[in-house]
Image 1 (cartoon, rainbow, N blue to C red):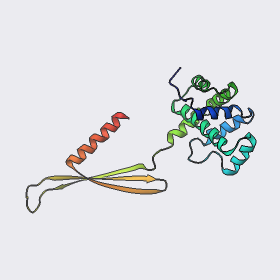
Image 2: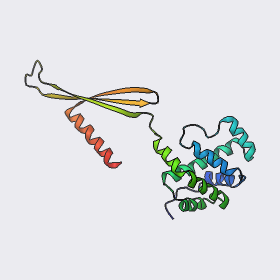
Image 3: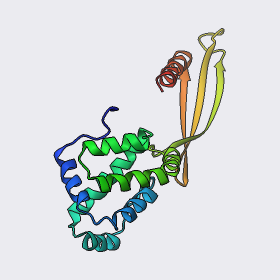
Image 4: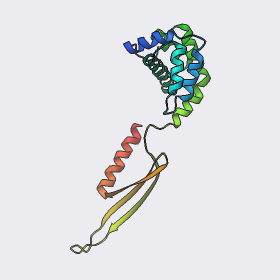
Length: 192
């Protein structure tokens, strides 16, 4: 068996009990809705829908929240690990989900995995994204006290995008600072 995707904590055990108790005819619909909204930063169900769902599943608000968070976590882990159906099934057995629920989750994953993974790849976790880079090199060649001065200064402007807004971040580097900054970027590039 591969490295565990899920840890059988008290919270997970509580969620598994609740999930195992969900009506089998309603469960696939719930899974499909979660998979449709997994990549978005919004709630899976609005307040009105959540209230109806609580009644339909015979759970309270906290229990519904736990169910939704756990199912979302299962699919996020499956996407992160690019889980094959058999591996996902084994992992779900390890936290003691019943066969009916495992089968429904695996089937929903088979039907939606490619789309979910593509949408999650496009989702950013950073509030700002680098849109453009501009740079300029300036060379100071003299000063009142020194006639043969050569002092390079690098100007770097980063254009950052956050939603609808653009923001420019301007930085000024001496030769040594720019070289150090470059080396730090190279280290980041190598580690990723």
